[in-house]
Image (cartoon, rainbow, N blue to C red; front, side, top):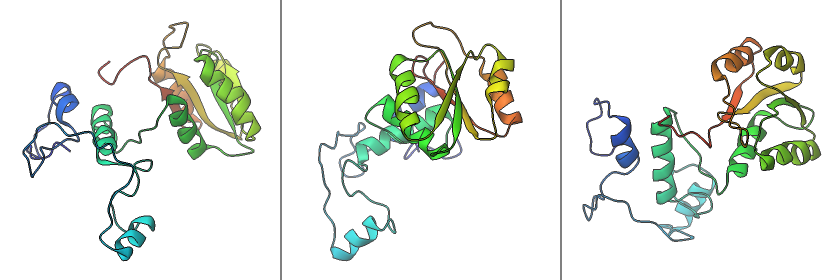
Length: 197
């Protein structure tokens, strides 16, 4: 991830926040990656294009799918969060929807904290319900209430590290423990905190 840096060296957070996902340019030696402001990329030939579109080869097709600037950002975020990978989206609600639709579909349910950003609450209460996903809102400080809200259809628990706008702090350890006991994931929106915190 850190390009030409030693593979076996463990770099600190500050170093990774500057360099992860961004090796020096092999042609120019530029330390900082340029912003690739292109919508499309050139294909070697028709077969190369066909292989890329069929996901048989790794490469860039269109910026809306991915581009080197976005890939560097994704690699950096994965490094800072200690993850295997990351997906960048244009907005937080897009990221939420991608994560949730990976875990739940029509007929499924989820339990969410009552302490959520207004746009998130509306997305869950209106949009997800239209898609057939039932959402139960519960005070996550009351673990018994959370446990009671979980049904066989529940596919995940959802909370914010720091609730918006109340500023209340999610007890991630306790809620994750309950989620793991029930065999479901806990999805956490970390907007107000950073990977550093």
